[in-house]
Length: 135
Image (cartoon, rainbow, N blue to C red; front, side):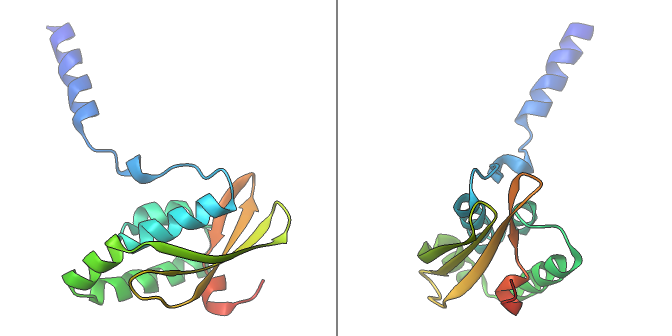
């Protein structure tokens, strides 16, 4: 009986979808930026948040982005989720620690900038830069 319960518990655990399935630890700044943008376009902000530097300003701007995204129609959300990322320039401001990614998406085509920093060995998006432009 114990063996049967153990097998059932394992099956249950492995059958549940892990919300972290979409998270992949970035190997470099471009990976971190691309994953953050893609998850945001898909409306998967909890996964996008995992690619972001955790501070109050970044949380504020992510919250604002979520509010804006939630106001879009279902058709617009679908268009965003199907959009491709168009990277126009990648600049290493400080080699191996700060990178600026200039990009747009194929749906809205509005140029934007994203700052990615290496923090405690991990590449993370400093989202507030997109709105303030301060290094």
